Length: 220
Image 1 (tube, helix red, strand yellow):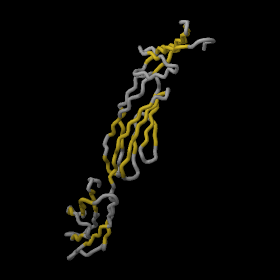
Image 2 (tube, rainbow, N blue to C red; image 1 turned 135 degrees about the vertical axis):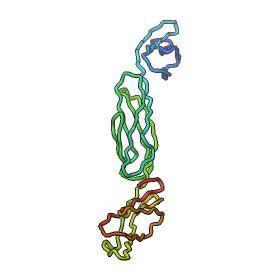
Image 3 (cartoon, rainbow, N blue to C red; image 1 turned 45 degrees about the vertical axis):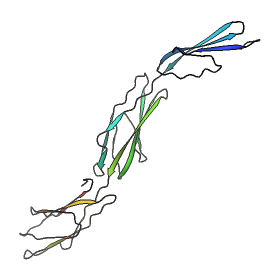
């Protein structure tokens, strides 16, 4: 302030730029330590200077990858690889959001989804001074079929035996591309039909019948 007359102002920001406005808002294009000066000049050329050092810290640069962006529901496990960089002095915090209501912290994470669908995985990194960066990547969980066998009869005579096997398998969000019947006697049969199937055994014994269903996305 000055008792009489007017003041003019010069802001020097320490990065080679100046401002002659009353308010000295300024954005820096790089990080570092800068000496900011405010010079007040009266109509008579009298000057006063105020100086203050400020530190501009860099933002983190977020970059990550996952082991496989499309996985079957059964046994899915997303393993992150965090390639983020930061050149500042601060300690960083890592916040992961998996798009299903769950969040975790840590530089690298392993995560399993409980349901099929498309999800956004977001990594947000924040420094101690509040500098942030974030990145989102999309992953997909394929629907998993449930294989189920229904035996019409579980005990038959050897002579002219015919074992009829029903298929009660079900799936939501996809379709079965193939069904592989394994009869336990060394024989198997692959089909796309979900209808019941007949099989005859050539010898007495106890056999375990297995059905392996494969979806269009190759989930078994």
